[in-house]
Image 1 (cartoon, rainbow, N blue to C red):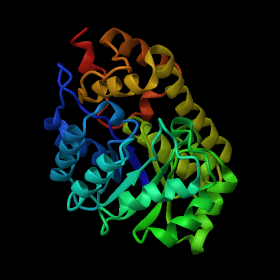
Image 2 (cartoon, helix red, strand yellow):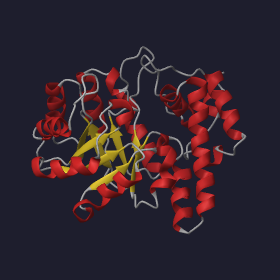
Image 3 (cartoon, rainbow, N blue to C red):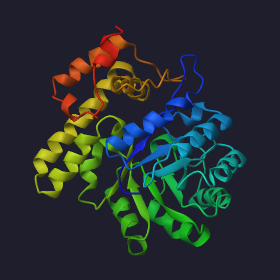
Image 4 (cartoon, one colour):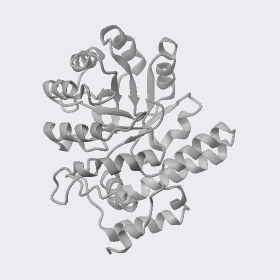
Length: 310
Protein backbone atom coordinates (compact mmCIF):
# COMPACT_ATOMS: atom_id res chain seq x y z
CA UNK A 1 0.00 0.00 0.00
CA UNK A 2 1.36 3.38 -1.06
CA UNK A 3 0.13 6.97 -1.23
CA UNK A 4 -3.35 7.84 0.11
CA UNK A 5 -5.66 5.05 1.28
CA UNK A 6 -9.15 6.11 2.39
CA UNK A 7 -10.59 4.77 5.62
CA UNK A 8 -14.13 4.32 4.34
CA UNK A 9 -17.55 4.99 5.82
CA UNK A 10 -20.27 2.36 6.21
CA UNK A 11 -23.12 3.67 4.03
CA UNK A 12 -26.61 3.37 5.47
CA UNK A 13 -30.17 3.62 4.26
CA UNK A 14 -32.42 6.19 5.95
CA UNK A 15 -33.65 3.45 8.31
CA UNK A 16 -30.11 2.66 9.45
CA UNK A 17 -29.67 -0.56 7.48
CA UNK A 18 -26.67 -1.02 5.19
CA UNK A 19 -26.70 0.58 1.76
CA UNK A 20 -24.26 -1.57 -0.21
CA UNK A 21 -25.76 -0.30 -3.48
CA UNK A 22 -23.71 2.89 -3.26
CA UNK A 23 -20.33 1.13 -2.99
CA UNK A 24 -19.71 1.14 -6.76
CA UNK A 25 -20.21 4.91 -6.92
CA UNK A 26 -18.13 5.38 -3.77
CA UNK A 27 -15.27 3.40 -5.29
CA UNK A 28 -15.39 5.43 -8.52
CA UNK A 29 -15.34 8.63 -6.47
CA UNK A 30 -12.18 7.54 -4.64
CA UNK A 31 -10.43 6.48 -7.83
CA UNK A 32 -11.35 9.80 -9.48
CA UNK A 33 -9.58 11.57 -6.63
CA UNK A 34 -6.40 9.47 -6.94
CA UNK A 35 -7.05 7.43 -3.83
CA UNK A 36 -5.18 4.17 -4.25
CA UNK A 37 -7.09 1.92 -1.90
CA UNK A 38 -9.79 1.50 0.73
CA UNK A 39 -9.49 0.49 4.35
CA UNK A 40 -12.91 -1.01 5.09
CA UNK A 41 -14.61 -1.82 8.40
CA UNK A 42 -12.25 0.32 10.46
CA UNK A 43 -12.85 3.02 13.04
CA UNK A 44 -14.14 5.44 10.39
CA UNK A 45 -16.48 2.69 9.18
CA UNK A 46 -18.18 2.27 12.57
CA UNK A 47 -17.11 -1.38 12.80
CA UNK A 48 -17.91 -1.48 16.51
CA UNK A 49 -21.55 -0.69 15.66
CA UNK A 50 -21.86 -3.32 12.93
CA UNK A 51 -22.72 -6.99 13.20
CA UNK A 52 -20.40 -9.64 11.80
CA UNK A 53 -22.93 -10.28 9.02
CA UNK A 54 -22.97 -6.58 8.12
CA UNK A 55 -19.19 -6.41 8.05
CA UNK A 56 -19.14 -9.39 5.69
CA UNK A 57 -21.75 -7.80 3.43
CA UNK A 58 -19.75 -4.57 3.22
CA UNK A 59 -16.48 -6.19 2.24
CA UNK A 60 -18.26 -8.39 -0.29
CA UNK A 61 -19.68 -5.25 -1.93
CA UNK A 62 -16.30 -3.52 -1.95
CA UNK A 63 -14.69 -6.60 -3.47
CA UNK A 64 -17.34 -6.76 -6.18
CA UNK A 65 -16.57 -3.19 -7.27
CA UNK A 66 -12.79 -3.23 -6.75
CA UNK A 67 -10.96 -1.86 -9.81
CA UNK A 68 -7.50 -2.97 -10.89
CA UNK A 69 -4.58 -1.57 -8.91
CA UNK A 70 -6.85 -0.54 -6.03
CA UNK A 71 -5.62 -2.01 -2.73
CA UNK A 72 -8.52 -3.30 -0.67
CA UNK A 73 -7.96 -3.98 3.01
CA UNK A 74 -10.48 -5.40 5.46
CA UNK A 75 -10.23 -4.70 9.17
CA UNK A 76 -11.30 -7.90 10.94
CA UNK A 77 -10.57 -7.03 14.57
CA UNK A 78 -13.13 -7.94 17.21
CA UNK A 79 -13.36 -8.29 20.98
CA UNK A 80 -14.30 -11.91 20.30
CA UNK A 81 -11.32 -13.83 18.88
CA UNK A 82 -13.57 -16.36 17.15
CA UNK A 83 -15.50 -13.60 15.37
CA UNK A 84 -12.22 -12.05 14.23
CA UNK A 85 -11.09 -15.43 12.91
CA UNK A 86 -14.39 -15.85 11.06
CA UNK A 87 -14.00 -12.43 9.45
CA UNK A 88 -10.42 -13.21 8.45
CA UNK A 89 -11.42 -16.51 6.87
CA UNK A 90 -14.28 -14.81 5.04
CA UNK A 91 -11.87 -12.21 3.61
CA UNK A 92 -9.99 -14.80 1.58
CA UNK A 93 -10.51 -14.25 -2.12
CA UNK A 94 -12.12 -10.86 -1.51
CA UNK A 95 -9.32 -8.50 -0.52
CA UNK A 96 -5.63 -7.71 -0.85
CA UNK A 97 -4.92 -7.70 2.87
CA UNK A 98 -6.44 -7.89 6.33
CA UNK A 99 -5.79 -5.77 9.38
CA UNK A 100 -6.60 -6.26 13.04
CA UNK A 101 -6.62 -4.13 16.17
CA UNK A 102 -6.46 -5.86 19.55
CA UNK A 103 -9.41 -6.38 21.91
CA UNK A 104 -10.25 -3.06 23.52
CA UNK A 105 -12.57 -3.86 26.47
CA UNK A 106 -10.62 -6.52 28.31
CA UNK A 107 -7.28 -5.34 27.00
CA UNK A 108 -4.16 -7.44 26.32
CA UNK A 109 -1.66 -6.80 29.08
CA UNK A 110 1.49 -7.72 27.17
CA UNK A 111 3.00 -7.81 23.73
CA UNK A 112 3.02 -11.58 23.94
CA UNK A 113 -0.75 -11.53 24.34
CA UNK A 114 -1.20 -9.22 21.33
CA UNK A 115 1.05 -11.34 19.14
CA UNK A 116 -0.87 -14.45 20.15
CA UNK A 117 -4.15 -12.80 19.16
CA UNK A 118 -2.71 -11.61 15.84
CA UNK A 119 -1.21 -15.02 15.10
CA UNK A 120 -4.51 -16.78 15.68
CA UNK A 121 -6.36 -14.38 13.37
CA UNK A 122 -3.69 -14.26 10.66
CA UNK A 123 -3.59 -18.05 10.47
CA UNK A 124 -7.20 -18.06 9.26
CA UNK A 125 -6.17 -16.21 6.07
CA UNK A 126 -2.63 -17.50 5.55
CA UNK A 127 -2.32 -16.26 1.96
CA UNK A 128 -3.34 -12.68 2.72
CA UNK A 129 -0.89 -10.00 3.90
CA UNK A 130 -1.59 -9.32 7.58
CA UNK A 131 -1.38 -5.85 9.13
CA UNK A 132 -1.58 -4.83 12.78
CA UNK A 133 -3.68 -1.75 13.59
CA UNK A 134 -1.87 0.37 16.19
CA UNK A 135 -4.28 2.95 17.61
CA UNK A 136 -3.61 3.07 21.36
CA UNK A 137 -5.77 6.15 21.96
CA UNK A 138 -8.80 3.91 21.32
CA UNK A 139 -7.57 0.42 22.22
CA UNK A 140 -5.43 1.22 25.26
CA UNK A 141 -2.79 -1.20 23.94
CA UNK A 142 0.26 1.06 23.96
CA UNK A 143 3.44 -0.91 23.36
CA UNK A 144 6.51 -0.16 21.21
CA UNK A 145 5.73 -1.34 17.73
CA UNK A 146 9.38 -2.06 16.96
CA UNK A 147 9.27 -4.65 19.74
CA UNK A 148 5.99 -6.00 18.37
CA UNK A 149 7.53 -6.42 14.93
CA UNK A 150 10.49 -8.34 16.30
CA UNK A 151 8.08 -10.86 17.79
CA UNK A 152 5.55 -10.86 14.95
CA UNK A 153 8.00 -11.77 12.17
CA UNK A 154 8.92 -14.93 14.06
CA UNK A 155 5.35 -16.09 14.68
CA UNK A 156 3.18 -14.71 11.84
CA UNK A 157 4.38 -15.87 8.41
CA UNK A 158 2.09 -13.47 6.53
CA UNK A 159 2.89 -10.42 8.67
CA UNK A 160 3.14 -7.49 6.21
CA UNK A 161 3.15 -4.29 8.25
CA UNK A 162 1.38 -1.87 10.56
CA UNK A 163 -1.30 0.80 10.30
CA UNK A 164 0.46 3.18 12.68
CA UNK A 165 -2.19 5.55 14.07
CA UNK A 166 -0.11 7.32 16.67
CA UNK A 167 2.50 10.03 16.31
CA UNK A 168 5.65 8.56 17.83
CA UNK A 169 8.54 9.60 15.60
CA UNK A 170 11.20 7.33 17.09
CA UNK A 171 9.04 4.20 17.12
CA UNK A 172 7.66 4.90 13.65
CA UNK A 173 11.14 5.32 12.19
CA UNK A 174 12.32 2.16 13.93
CA UNK A 175 9.45 0.27 12.31
CA UNK A 176 10.25 1.72 8.89
CA UNK A 177 13.89 0.63 9.26
CA UNK A 178 13.07 -2.83 10.64
CA UNK A 179 14.61 -5.65 8.61
CA UNK A 180 15.92 -3.25 6.01
CA UNK A 181 12.54 -1.63 5.47
CA UNK A 182 10.90 -4.87 4.35
CA UNK A 183 7.52 -4.14 5.98
CA UNK A 184 4.78 -1.73 4.96
CA UNK A 185 4.35 0.87 7.74
CA UNK A 186 1.38 3.09 6.99
CA UNK A 187 0.98 6.41 8.77
CA UNK A 188 -2.49 6.85 10.24
CA UNK A 189 -2.74 10.35 11.76
CA UNK A 190 -4.22 12.63 9.08
CA UNK A 191 -3.69 15.80 11.10
CA UNK A 192 0.08 15.19 11.15
CA UNK A 193 0.77 13.88 7.66
CA UNK A 194 3.33 16.63 7.04
CA UNK A 195 5.25 15.50 10.13
CA UNK A 196 5.48 11.97 8.75
CA UNK A 197 7.30 13.08 5.59
CA UNK A 198 10.74 13.71 7.12
CA UNK A 199 10.39 10.33 8.85
CA UNK A 200 10.16 8.58 5.50
CA UNK A 201 6.44 7.79 5.22
CA UNK A 202 5.22 6.78 1.76
CA UNK A 203 1.74 5.46 2.59
CA UNK A 204 -1.11 6.94 4.60
CA UNK A 205 -4.52 5.65 5.75
CA UNK A 206 -7.11 8.14 6.95
CA UNK A 207 -10.70 9.30 6.99
CA UNK A 208 -10.11 12.84 5.68
CA UNK A 209 -8.73 11.47 2.41
CA UNK A 210 -12.42 10.96 1.61
CA UNK A 211 -12.71 14.76 1.60
CA UNK A 212 -9.35 16.47 1.09
CA UNK A 213 -7.14 14.31 -1.14
CA UNK A 214 -5.99 17.26 -3.32
CA UNK A 215 -4.83 19.12 -0.22
CA UNK A 216 -2.77 16.19 1.05
CA UNK A 217 -1.19 15.50 -2.34
CA UNK A 218 -0.27 19.20 -2.49
CA UNK A 219 1.33 18.92 0.96
CA UNK A 220 3.40 15.96 -0.23
CA UNK A 221 4.39 17.81 -3.41
CA UNK A 222 5.33 21.02 -1.60
CA UNK A 223 7.42 19.15 0.94
CA UNK A 224 9.21 17.23 -1.80
CA UNK A 225 10.06 20.51 -3.51
CA UNK A 226 11.50 21.93 -0.30
CA UNK A 227 8.61 24.32 0.38
CA UNK A 228 8.29 23.25 3.99
CA UNK A 229 6.49 26.32 5.35
CA UNK A 230 3.84 26.15 2.62
CA UNK A 231 3.34 22.45 3.29
CA UNK A 232 2.89 23.13 7.00
CA UNK A 233 0.41 25.94 6.27
CA UNK A 234 -1.71 23.54 4.21
CA UNK A 235 -1.54 20.96 6.98
CA UNK A 236 -2.96 23.59 9.33
CA UNK A 237 -5.96 23.88 7.00
CA UNK A 238 -6.53 20.14 7.26
CA UNK A 239 -6.44 20.41 11.04
CA UNK A 240 -8.96 23.26 10.85
CA UNK A 241 -11.25 21.07 8.74
CA UNK A 242 -11.21 18.37 11.41
CA UNK A 243 -11.69 20.88 14.22
CA UNK A 244 -14.72 22.53 12.59
CA UNK A 245 -16.52 19.26 11.91
CA UNK A 246 -15.68 17.95 15.36
CA UNK A 247 -16.92 21.11 17.07
CA UNK A 248 -20.22 21.21 15.16
CA UNK A 249 -21.18 17.56 15.40
CA UNK A 250 -18.36 15.24 16.48
CA UNK A 251 -15.98 14.31 13.67
CA UNK A 252 -17.02 10.72 12.93
CA UNK A 253 -20.64 11.57 12.25
CA UNK A 254 -19.81 14.90 10.63
CA UNK A 255 -17.27 13.41 8.24
CA UNK A 256 -19.80 10.85 7.10
CA UNK A 257 -22.50 13.50 6.66
CA UNK A 258 -20.06 15.72 4.77
CA UNK A 259 -19.96 13.14 1.98
CA UNK A 260 -23.38 14.44 0.88
CA UNK A 261 -21.55 17.47 -0.48
CA UNK A 262 -19.93 15.14 -3.01
CA UNK A 263 -23.25 13.62 -4.04
CA UNK A 264 -22.64 10.54 -1.89
CA UNK A 265 -25.36 10.16 0.72
CA UNK A 266 -23.85 7.83 3.31
CA UNK A 267 -27.00 7.95 5.39
CA UNK A 268 -27.21 8.31 9.15
CA UNK A 269 -24.49 7.48 11.62
CA UNK A 270 -25.08 4.83 14.21
CA UNK A 271 -25.13 5.64 17.90
CA UNK A 272 -23.18 7.18 19.58
CA UNK A 273 -22.22 9.28 16.54
CA UNK A 274 -24.47 12.09 15.33
CA UNK A 275 -25.73 12.87 11.83
CA UNK A 276 -25.56 16.45 10.50
CA UNK A 277 -28.66 17.98 8.95
CA UNK A 278 -28.32 20.13 5.83
CA UNK A 279 -28.42 23.40 7.74
CA UNK A 280 -25.47 22.32 9.87
CA UNK A 281 -23.60 21.13 6.79
CA UNK A 282 -24.01 24.53 5.16
CA UNK A 283 -22.80 26.17 8.38
CA UNK A 284 -19.69 24.00 8.26
CA UNK A 285 -19.15 24.88 4.62
CA UNK A 286 -19.42 28.58 5.38
CA UNK A 287 -16.73 28.31 8.05
CA UNK A 288 -14.47 26.29 5.75
CA UNK A 289 -14.84 28.86 2.98
CA UNK A 290 -13.28 31.49 5.26
CA UNK A 291 -10.10 29.40 5.25
CA UNK A 292 -10.17 28.83 1.50
CA UNK A 293 -10.72 25.10 1.92
CA UNK A 294 -13.33 24.38 -0.79
CA UNK A 295 -10.70 24.51 -3.56
CA UNK A 296 -8.90 21.62 -1.87
CA UNK A 297 -11.96 19.42 -1.56
CA UNK A 298 -12.32 16.31 -3.68
CA UNK A 299 -13.28 16.74 -7.34
CA UNK A 300 -16.98 16.03 -7.34
CA UNK A 301 -17.63 18.57 -4.60
CA UNK A 302 -20.69 20.71 -5.22
CA UNK A 303 -22.76 22.50 -2.55
CA UNK A 304 -25.68 22.27 -5.03
CA UNK A 305 -26.21 18.72 -3.79
CA UNK A 306 -27.69 20.04 -0.57
CA UNK A 307 -28.66 23.63 -1.35
CA UNK A 308 -31.61 22.34 -3.37
CA UNK A 309 -32.83 20.35 -0.37
CA UNK A 310 -32.56 22.92 2.43
